[in-house]
Every structure is written in structure tokens, then in C-alpha cells.
Image (cartoon, rainbow over the protein chains, first blue to last red):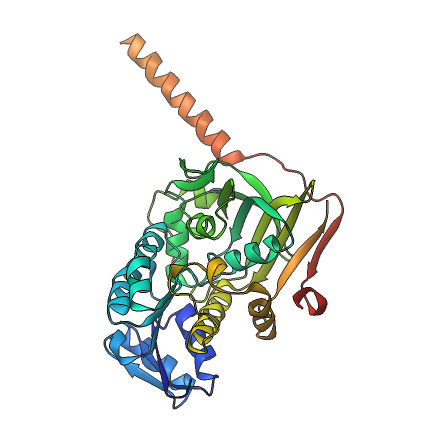
Length: 328
Length: 45
């Protein structure tokens, strides 16, 4: 692993955390940081120490692995260039379009022998890991339902706002169904201190990554917690500027399936600042790829790529902790 | 003219009712017992 160089594209709330996670690894020679905002790029590099290097242009050929932590709509172009250059990619993309486009790189990534980790963030990302972890307790998985609360940095908040006016993508009876945004209200209970929140269908990519990881699953849905104001103003531009670092967020993953002849439901969750968790997950995924702990090539989500137990164990050491709901 | 006014009023009222129903939501069932427990130690072995 010595002499490895990683390019982190995007020095916002998520990218800065991912870069911080990577510079802490002595096996990584240099972390190249690219961001269109020069002032932010230089501030992040200054805070990371001598192994962080600012770069003007995100050129994948200068690194062994690329972490894409910029807004989702710019990630697919970088992904294409990264795979074409024969480099691994870790993407934090959280939009349906970007995830679709990155998954389309699967054949080329396999051909070139590189890994494209799609949606390696809080949701998708941790949501896929928790689903895989819960599924290990079951003999067959019938349904997976994801609910997400809160946002990371400004790009994530804008994506959250846009998701509330885009059609939801449900997997039902082994077929994709498009659902109206804001429909399917469900009161979901997240780990404390979030508690209960109304969640609605929205344009979320989690199902796109979970369905290939669980080929026999009959139903996969993803919902987003939203307030009345969020829903009322979804079709307007954002009325207030988003929080620079994001606030606390939560995740709830419900997996229904069978153990022998009995039906069972396992509910896992997490509470953290989404930007912090997403940056840590992206950084850890990058370290696993570099360290040879992810050998699978092609483009897929974390549920298909990593062993959940050791990954969750390492995440817990960094402070990103999962929880299980026990009760009725 | 009166018919047009009535139709517009009906559409407007229906829109207001739909908006109220869409934004209002309704209650749900909170967990009856138990709670969240952090995954740690033995859970992650």
C-alpha cells in the first residue's frame, strides 16, 4: 500500500472529512485535494498537514484512487474519466441520475479491473451496509425499507430539496414502480435524539443499489423525512441557504424476511451528522480498496462490495455507530 | 358566466382541501415497548 496517492474531489463537508480520514493512514503517501473553490481547497489542505496537496484540476491519472465528494451532478463525468484511466473510484453520489450513470460504468470497470463504489456515504452507503448486516440474520430477505432524516453539507441539502419534487423509485413485486413525490407518508422512528418523523417517497437512489445486492428481494422502498414547509416549498428554489456543515441526521433500515418458517423483522439505525458519517464511510471504503480488502471489480453499492461486520466495527471505532431496535 | 364562476370556485376549494390534506398528515403508531440499543462488542463479532 506504500506510495499510494488518493485524489479527493470536493473539499466541502463530506470531502474534507474523507480527506482527513485518509491522511490519518500512514500507508497513503499523498492526498490530493481538488475543489473549484480555491479558498476552501487551501483551507482544507492547510488543516490536513504536509501529506495533503492542493490540485487545480481533478486529474484521475495523478492518483491510484479517486474519491468523488463534489455535488452529485458532477460525479458521473469524473467517474467516466476515472474508469477510463483505469483508476478505482469511491463516489458519494446521492441522486438517482448520478447513481444510474455510475452503475452504467459496471462493464467498463470490470474490463479494466477497477472498483467503482457507488453511493459510499450516509444514505446511500450506511443504509446499504445496515441492510446487508440485518440480512445476515435472515435466511431469506423479502423486503427492505430505508428512511433517512437530515442532510450533510449544502450540496446534500440541495439534493434533499430536489429529491422531494422527483418521483420515488420503488421496487415492488420484482419490478420498478415510479411513485409521486411526497406520497406514501409513514411515521418512522429513528434512534434518539431524533425520534419520530414523517417520511415520504422522494427521488432517492437507495433502492437502485439494494436491488442488485439482494436479487430475490420482492420490495425495496426509500423515504425521506420532511416537514410541512419542506413539502410546501419543494417546487420552489431553496428559500434559506443550507447549513454549511449540516445538522444531526438519522437513518432507519427495516429488513423483513424469513428464518425457517417464521417471518421476522430487523430494524437497524444510526444517528450522526450525515456529512461526518459520509466522509468517514467514503474514506474507509477507499482504504479498503487500496488495502486489497475489496477485491470485487465493477460498479456497485456497499451492500455488494464489503463485509458489513468488520466494516461496521471499524466505523464504530471512528465514532460512527449503528443501533438496533429491540421491541414492538 | 355564473357557471364559470361556480366551476372556478369548485376547483379552488378542491385545491385548498387537497393542499390541506397533503400537508396535514395524520398520526402514527409509536413503538409500544423497547427501544434502540447501540450495536457494540458482541453484536459486531
